[in-house]
Image 1: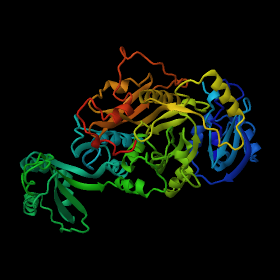
Image 2 (image 1 turned 180 degrees about the horizontal axis):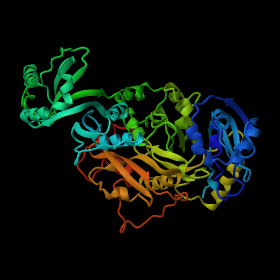
Image 3 (image 1 turned 120 degrees about the vertical axis):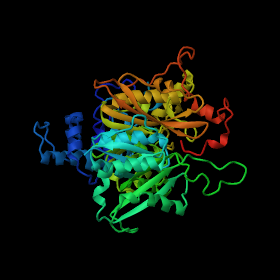
Image 4 (image 1 turned 90 degrees about the vertical axis):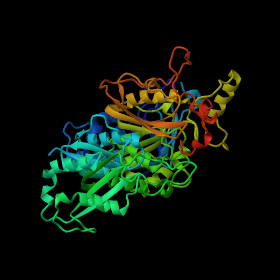
Length: 123
Length: 469
């Protein structure tokens, strides 16, 4: 159940793959929507850590257009609710995440991504 | 109003009592005024609290608290107890006219004969309580504890007589029951045997609850376990309201057999599945975190080699050039009938792992965040300085509690990130250093020492091995 909050924090970490290695691109995904408890403090704390463009782009690719292109300066309840939905309630159950740079495919099965590197990819 | 309270602790994990009290008071933002030289090996402790409400909070959350009392008196003789109790008359005066009550006299490490229990109760007659005695639903319960030293029965010879040394107590405590601890029942709730999914490395419920309290888990917190395994630490932390992220180099531990993954099944059983943010397979020494300062706490029981050894990506021995070329060809063009590619791993030595874990925590924790983990050590060789071999600038040890198994033990280490500046991720590179000029901690090569039965001492192997690693 890779959630977009996780996706927003993971970059390709293969050896010498240092630029254009984020965000990973979802491929052949199978989605599921599951409700999660809303905690506005948690989201507010987390907000500064988000790469906004990557989040919006990925949400659009997955068919969710509830977030504005630019991160709003004013944070209201409706915005937090939408953000909560995008970050925590969209789950990717199967598929893969592909590095835009080195094309490493990190497969997802049963909601658990395999981020292990191959022998030639570790430092 | 500031007042004294008597805490009666459960008879286990005495070294963990103080850190737990301090953690829970920190979560709720209040002070506990401890005695000058607290002796945590004793089952009773008198502390000062600013509000009675704080006693309720402690009793609700501390796994090691059995009950809390309004403190009236203590003494090594009953004369001392009565004298102090008389001088504290203002504390209990309001119960004199018309409050139903129950009076209990009980011993710790000892059974007091009924006849003397009655004598003790009668010696408090000067309090002159006029309310009725109600053994079922009293408005207040007064308790008098006699604390005795532990006196194990002699190995050979007749067992001790029941009433031997009656009255030879170390100290007496007297007070009014305020609240029974309710957190201890969680030990039963999280019992590993009743869990939908567990493995041979699962951590016992009581210890994992104590660890969760050390992380200051509460709603709004984000906690990470980099050696997730079967998720033992995740369940109690999530139960206390935090959300959890888990990773492990071996996804099979988190998945188990069947669907959904085992960790999710167990979390569903506890009603906290939505608080497991995600599970992820990766080697923590080759991790994909995009940035640091993400988590409020890192809690983990790193594998230390008895049940399961720690692994990291790489090879024990470098491949020859020919083999490397062959391997590369294979990994890029796997034959279609091949299983998914599984990269090679090599052992991860414990003292290296511990040092890396502290550096990783410094990178991934928010300022003020905590790292809570178990470190096994050889009892005879352990020295205070062992902990310092893994420390780095910006991190501070705030608790170090021993769980003693005889020839070895494990220490629950709690470290706080005191620095506020940003740190870069650790390199995870280790050079074989010269052992001559650096201190070698007792946990170095713990696995080898364990399987040699700690041969430096005269320890016997049967004490070891009963606890999961």
